[in-house]
Amino acid sequence: MSDKLKIGVILSSTRKGRMAEVVHDWFALKTREREDMAFGLLDLREANLPFFDEDAPPAAKTPEHAAARAWEEAIQGYDGFIVLTCEYNHSISAALKNAFDYGYRGWVRKPLGAVGYGGVGAARAVEHLRLIGVNFGMVPVAGAVHIGGADFMTLSKTRDPQSLGDHLDKSLGALLDDIAWWGKITKAARA
Ligand SMILES: Cc1cc2nc3c(=O)[nH]c(=O)nc-3n(C[C@H](O)[C@H](O)[C@H](O)COP(=O)(O)O)c2cc1C
Image 1 (tube, helix red, strand yellow):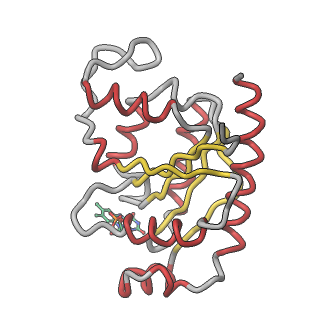
Image 2: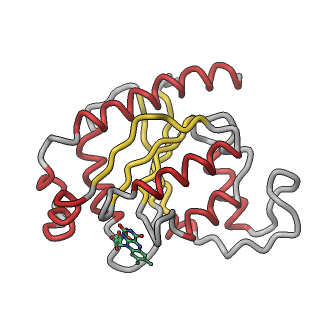
Image 3: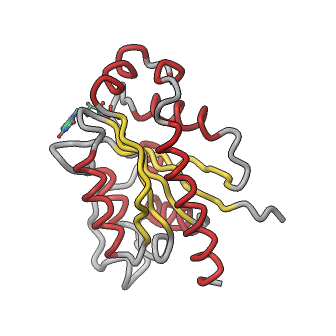
């Protein structure tokens, strides 16, 4: 059995023409030689979660919607998460918040990191995301990537992950190292 950490990569935008897919292409390109982690895609568009309408929080009761049960089961299979987060009105997308609200067991005591993209690299959304993670007993890590300003404009225009060059590699490496460090420790502790 592989001892690689399983890391869920969450696409936080569900809209038509989303940049999320381009950011994911960049992430996949840059992580393909990372051997200590196996990345799995968690696409909120595919998860197709209804807007939260359960009669109890998932911490108290397993959700009834089939899509929500499938989501909770999917996230339980991971040792940590990296969210490719957009920024909508200075916070995370409603779809991402809804996906967090629908989970519980799958989030608890696992590392949480982010690649933010947008005008300011989704800096405000990443901070909000960290606070939400704390509520689940997650470990929001210090390392993060912010694809902002000219980088975000270039990527939006070209939609080509190669167009970003390599100057974000260092911050991506720091994020991955943090996720690996906390991922190993929290996996052992949960066991
Ligand atoms: C509803 C909405 C709100 C937005 N608010 C912000 C914002 O607060 N800060 C920002 O930098 N960009 C904002 N933007 C622009 C997004 O950064 C940009 O559209 C980005 O491509 C969104 O990610 P997506 O394409 O994967 O959905 C907003 C876009 C939308 C659709």
